[in-house]
Image 1 (cartoon, one colour):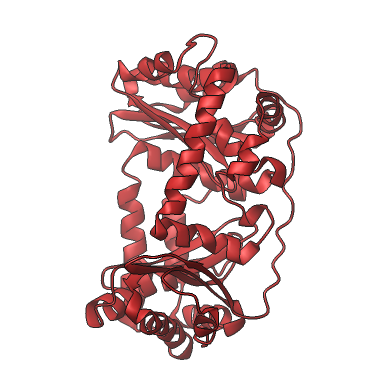
Image 2 (cartoon, rainbow, N blue to C red; image 1 turned 90 degrees about the horizontal axis):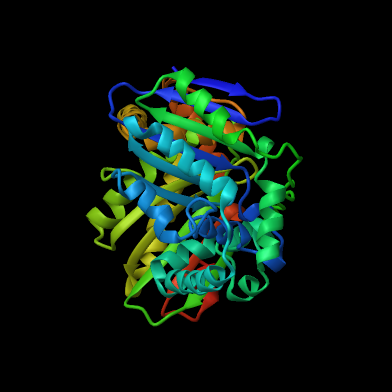
Length: 421
């Protein structure tokens, strides 16, 4: 069973003992990401994350930062999203002290060398180009842009080449000072440990965190009244598409039914879309459906890379499967399969300490409450066929349809006409 405490300054500490492993993960989550940025410095959350590994007062170089964990066989990394930024170290449990100290060192004592900053700016520019040059990733990158447009929810997490030029060292330091504060931060320690030791280490190394109030993100504006399309012409052999609909935020009780619906549609190798689009029609090698839910936004989207000569057929096939779920209830066997698939994959993923830390920490950060795996499974089990039918009828409407398409196409009107249900 996990344990959570909240200190007077607002810092939250969560410990999750896991006796079946020899590993331990220390994860620090900060409630800031691209949704908290201004357009001028879009990408600053991601840039800041990169710079935390460039040297600290104790370990002045990038090599010294890395070697501290390399010498004990530990692993480390970081990530930036729309809602939060995370830093973690994973080691054998006997090196728990080192893992906590190391994460706290980069968190508090990073020195952000100016020379390294200019070097990293170039690295991030290449990262942006890499994803833009890959049509598969680019179609996925365009989808939030289509949904939310010119507001933080629609901007690229990495920023643009133009906005990167505006990010100075002083702006990085100012942003860190405002956002990397106690009320925005959660420390999660999962793996082979006991509660008391984990909590005491977190208190010891994170006691100097700032108690000031963080910045708040702007409200996301959603205003869609008709099907929307974003087309990027590329000379590709294969067409890459994202076709989906706006749905619910993470607080909506319908999210459990939505998760099962997404799984049945396209998140299994025996799913409806995999069977129809790949198995029966041979239109795609890869096709999958994902559910994205945040505190203020949500969508269901199907991604596929298909034969460009048969793109119209592929779009229509996906829409047909969407429509079917809003006309007739799914079968009892599909309902059982969808539920058991979600529960089984969740249970398997939580065998690792880093996944366990993320499972508990992200819930606390985004929802300010935690459901254990068992509690989550109970909510999944409550879902009925009628619940899923009602959700499908609510979300699969023409005015909620969105399509991003990357491929050798110019005729926007051609694809706009296909967006019907």
